[in-house]
Image 1 (tube, rainbow, N blue to C red):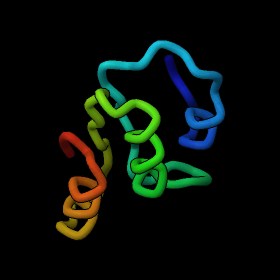
Image 2 (cartoon, rainbow, N blue to C red):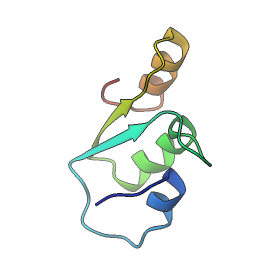
Image 3 (cartoon, rainbow, N blue to C red):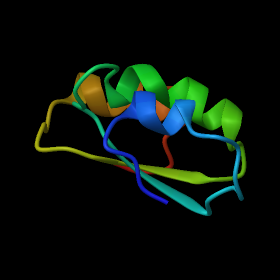
Image 4 (cartoon, rainbow, N blue to C red):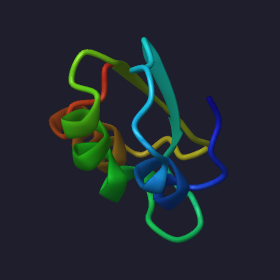
Length: 71
């Protein structure tokens, strides 16, 4: 499946759980970092890979702390 924003992904009707979620850290509306806990709660077995152009340690640490599988 695809979603343009984190809000769209969270509002979508339940479907088969994904194996992998590719999540941009800086989405319009709710950011990827802000949506990460809700996405992990919705699909706890899914691996969440953060995509971004940012390379600062604070964002990497926060994403991993919130449950991202990789950055």
